[in-house]
Length: 159
Image: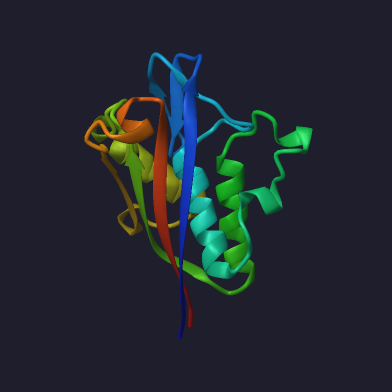
């Protein structure tokens, strides 16, 4: 059996807006996240974890921010692409683990919906997806509520 593990990390700063997209779920918030796409840090980190497990670069390699066609793109496109590339190479996503790092918005009330949405995008059972959150104890840019960070791990298996 071939087992591969990858990790991904992403950060986006807050800017104007009335919601954030996190793990494919729209969450009301007095500020939005800035980015070339919809700035979904969770899906970006997870896509990068899958690309990393494949030795296949990162989102920027597959969806360059210099290309206008990706401006405002919904991040489920990136995660679907990463999952499809794994499948094309004979891998299944065994499980993934995602941590959102922020003081606000509170993730707990939305974690179940986020877990379900990630599972739906990747075509796997929800019990193979973990979505959780932590704060940075008011330290650093996330602690000052300047943005949100995400860390993800993905495990791919090929029999």
